[in-house]
Length: 411
Image 1 (cartoon, rainbow, N blue to C red):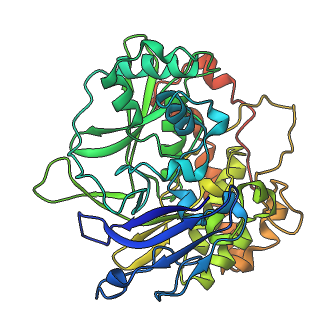
Image 2: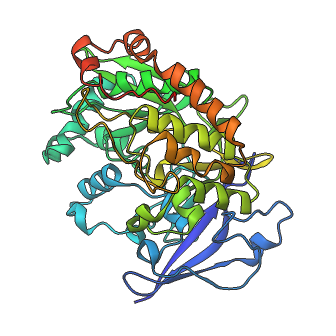
């Protein structure tokens, strides 16, 4: 059975998405095919929706292949992971395992990450301005009901608010909120958390910034029970001057899409391969990417999979996005000292060691001495991790869970 999905693209500094092309999906699992429409190609300001898989502006049909259930990588990047699929399933009375990529493309969602939106109809509903969320504790409670499979007690307003931002990636419960006139991703605590995720993630984001890594603007909201909600400003949105609650959209792709991989192929990815692919796409990010790799080694962040590295389209072109989803793995001294990152580091594969990271530094455009200087700066900065934990209200008992997580990378 053939299904048509209309693909809309918001061009830079424009508020209204325009029809860019048509995606046809014939069988479960793909492959699908896409074609830019003539009205889009005739625009003087038309831009490719991706710098890799749909990078040529012409009317030819492009096949997706069988990756990502037959969906182009740039389309998959605009769709949710575990949490968003759980919310979608809850709102449609479906088992979460039955939710497919194409199913998630049938419903327009103006809060998708990036500049794309999709619809089963050749139109999008008019976007409404986003309002402030005043009762964060209520949303956290509602999110927990979905996690517990007890969503029957949710009212329509709670469901609406949780759907906002449900297209964002990641497994933790979250939504998109308007806060201080800016758009933030709010990550909620969950029952059974081993530590206060919000305060730890805020501390690590601050720590990354201190060693020269670009991170989003982050904030912390304390709930009445003492737990925290982590707010991270949406780097794919830019406030429209003079229009409160309205935002320009920026294009987004993940490193998974940049490399042309399916999610099941994450282990085949590597930091040097990302640097190579970015260079071919005209994106200069070798220094920043190398610094992030070294930081992830230093803080034991093994959740650095390919969807946790992104690229956004600014006015000047594509660039690496601010770093996000930075979270160390709890560890105590002397236990499991050696570990692997999620993707490759150097000539010794995924081993998270100084030697391995230095082995491929030239592929990032760095000399040996430049790479070693990054190790020095990151190692010195990370040595102050306890100060950043304390400044963000991480309790002493939570901090001790990470006492073996932070490495000195000095020779």
